[in-house]
Length: 301
Image (cartoon, rainbow, N blue to C red):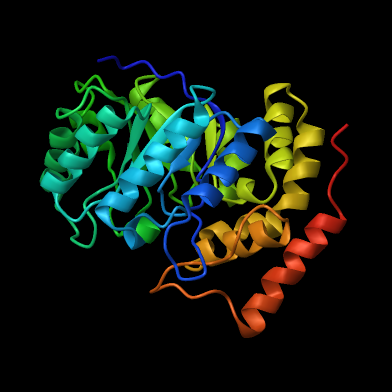
């Protein structure tokens, strides 16, 4: 086990595709995964929030990750989302990911229950110690009602395979606080699309992105411009992208991202209940946003 992390760049949270009767469509899911890899992304998050983790049955989760490993063929890291109701289920999942051949795990707090700090620490440590895979902790207080505090991260600093933090708190000051507290102990990732540029400027090594599913080339160009120090170019792309990036911060982010993906000819908007596809005024609003973005795409030559 190692505390080093070589994940970086643009890592989309890939969608899970469904057939018309809402079975998992592994062929279509692999097509989405392969298209993103061919576009040049630097990794894949599989069955994260956008991948509808909590709408999948246990075997379906494993099948989707196995499909991604098969599709990737080692071209990019395959990081599996681990979002389970109990610690024992999360441990079983983590062990299976190692057998399947995933590159790493994105570990969430246990679902539904809001833990104390002691309980959160125990959940993360127990899962990490059950596998040799590198682990990215996912902090998203608005979505999951749990904040991964500095104290919790300090208590996990001696767990060598906890290597990264996906930071989805909406306050970009958190990146500086994390760096000041831990230096380079944890590799940081921007996890909320509409503060991605801020996070990358403040020390994030990569961007775990939702809207990359619809606009991968622009996502890659944004990160490339920042890496090259071309802030004028980065601002141009970010300002163009921002109306869509705001969708990632809404409760209907999965439906919005999958609708955008469909409009751009990259996948289907089908979601599994309890989610429903966007309808009415919201559908019209998001459709217009995506169509306008497609019409005004920045030149990427």
